[in-house]
View 1 (cartoon, rainbow, N blue to C red):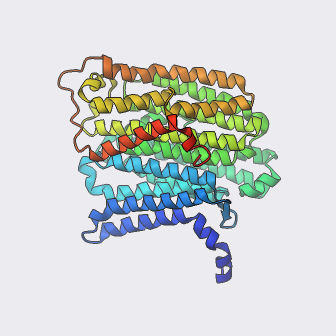
View 2 (tube, helix red, strand yellow):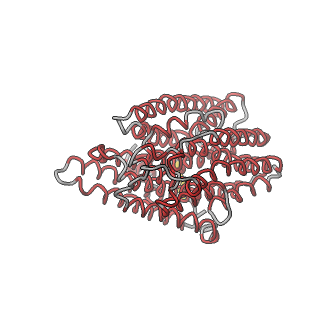
View 3 (cartoon, rainbow, N blue to C red):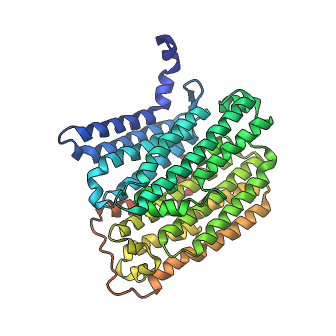
Length: 479
């Protein structure tokens, strides 16, 4: 590539569109330099936060742009949707980082590499949301996945963490292989890997259809959709809880953003099949969560149910051609879920830092009396996950099921709502345990070093309430 071609390929628009990626990459490089320069380790938190703030500003500028920017040879787009997803990735990364400040204890000497890996995952998620080419998406997927494999096993002195990292790596490699095989079949069948070109030529041949099926299956793995969901409870429980916070929110949002972008490749008559898979995922997640006694595993199964709820949006988009409505509903739902599940997992990491026994549901008895602030925040997060009005979770589900109703998928909408009601059985059980069960003697979590955790929890509480009672501040502006 000569200078003229490079100048045409990477111009001012490309610089503007990829500015969040550039800022995050500079942040990673600065963190690496801080690790080797004498006395620079103390600057790591400042560098990390500065990178996220810089990326946040860039995404807001893209959000306010009047026209989408299709750049890099039409392989990457920066528009309202990608910027909205990008903001969610930044918040999810920030929550995982803040709650991790006090979590690792003896592993604090390794927090430099932890922060580098964490910031790299944000680069991968951002690329996945803006990808208009399967190769660009694959690069983003690997930039997300490989650091997460390492982060899942970050507590190297704990067997559960190492096991979680190994399981996630093996199963993740299987998912990536499905994606690559599917992309190869799609290329053989259509002669293109560009979503822009595929919108024109379609994917109608048998090889192309098989390729699309394999690609969707690989995305279902990342989204923990039935039947690719069984890895979630073990990996979420074994991984460090701040990492689980990011896996449960940002990773799911990134995979879903790309799934929405490539929905046009799916046959319109597959909407009912997608809807049935969504309901099966919701049923599997809710039934699995009902029998859990560990709060972390319960939220893992709950996350599977929420992935199924999100998949209803795809069914609605296919059946009714409601691309814009589906995008808005998915963004709002995921925004509520990022702050709700992020706050819930963050509180668990706060409790777990003082002993893993405090993640057991029975050991939360009496928490409402002994730690009223923590219990109140956790109660709000449980109510939002259950879809109780005045919370972000309620409006998120309202938008999702509205898409299904507009697409005339009435039976799927009704069954989905009933399955969402079933979920209240285990969310309310947490609240009942905290406020109505007597506390065991001698089981009072000290919850020390709580400054950053209080800030992150208060931020999540405010966002959950604002998304629940002030939807007009977000709809049409951010989502």
